Image (cartoon, rainbow, N blue to C red; front, side, top):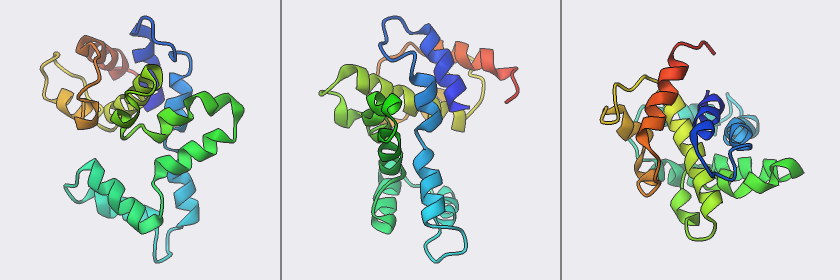
Length: 172
């Protein structure tokens, strides 16, 4: 779902250098969760699946979730994702965006395009997780989509409304 949302957003962005890879980036950005599911399998004392289920029940900030994930497993899922995509040359250009998609502000000053890609991955993921049609640009869902780590990311909210309007009738 996030890949489809990212694809639609990228179609509307003019001058964004990574529009052709946003779909693929959104597809693989959380592949580290699958890696962690395999490394820390269900039924083991340190099950990643159980961790995710437990975390979803608590009102925790993303920063705190990442801290707990790192403390418990040694690395976050985006670390595993970025290392896995690095193994495939075609994805190497997006590796840093995938690594920082939960913390794009950390790479803001180093590369504007990678920062924008990381933000768009995060945004697409947020929109997929909180999938609903927005009535307008002031709809309360915007706050969920444009989460705190995206506060400095400039995007026309009308693009988000139009994207969800377009995708609302599609089945996935």
